[in-house]
Image 1 (cartoon, rainbow, N blue to C red):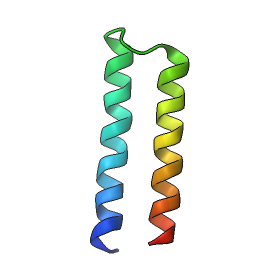
Image 2: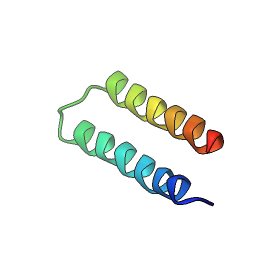
Image 3: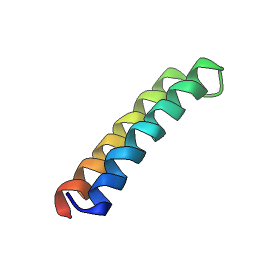
Image 4: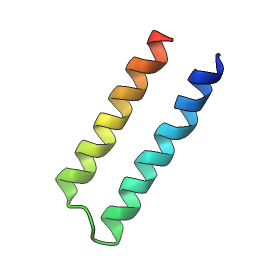
Length: 51
């Protein structure tokens, strides 16, 4: 695994968990949280496999 792939594997869960925390404290709505997590996973997967 390259360093870029390791970075993606580390940052994608951090971004997703941050979205969950924002949902818990009431900043994001459910649809915003789901879309943020889905887009984060999609972008990370595309970038991971294109490296």
